[in-house]
Length: 81
Length: 258
Image 1: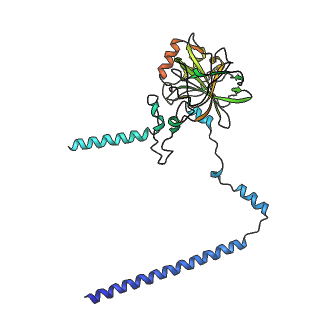
Image 2: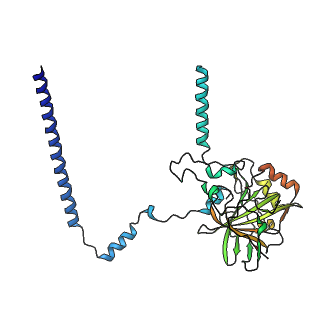
Image 3: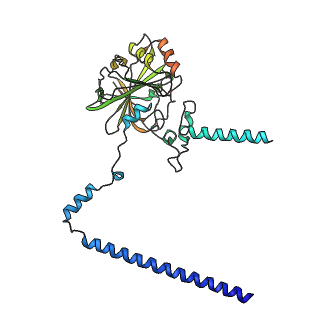
């Protein structure tokens, strides 16, 4: 009885180790693919002159980083102030 | 036992709902506690206490103007208040007149122009002079494009009828939060100013209502505008006691233009 249980336990442990190994190998190959894609795109990107890159950066400023002026006049129309 | 449990759970539910609905609401009766009012929709300090400045601010308004010192070096005020067909607004805390969006009227403080945005009334006055409280006070609120605020305070005393004030009273909605737009009623704004306009008290202060934001320049004219006893009664029928009590000066000085 004990021998039977031990065999079942061992089989389960072996299956677990095998499946973990398979998953890890798969993830590793995906990461490799992604890295190669990034490297490719970086190599293909056109080399802008420095002043053009600076201009682009200015245009791409996100809305949220721009200073927000509180509209006090509007606030004071809606509240007693 | 069962009934008591059901009732108490219902009461708790109602109280909880009320506390959520009334988040950040304020009243003049509880003005000493404005600073500790909590906004239950917020979870982080300082957002939980939206009116904290009312309690901890050091440059709060109104104040007692009695300790003023006379100065001849202060700016001259020029009133460019033109007639307008404004909106009449019952804010729930005061009778208010919102000037139209394209209104060109402004207050010139020295060479700086402050566009007039709105006017509202307090009963009794918020600013006091020694032991003297006035029947009411009118605030002309000016806001520059950069957000800088200058408020002109005019103390109201009992005398003869003010025709423009009567028009305001007759057009203000009685329901709190109600706005009367496009009434087509024209007001001569300058008629609400007293005759003598070149003498005033001035100091740095705050909004007199929550959130009590500081950085407001105050100018309170020494002369008063007259309204009748009946008009004061009419104003009280909207709001009575909508005045913040005088605040500590905290090392500020009140200057008086002579």
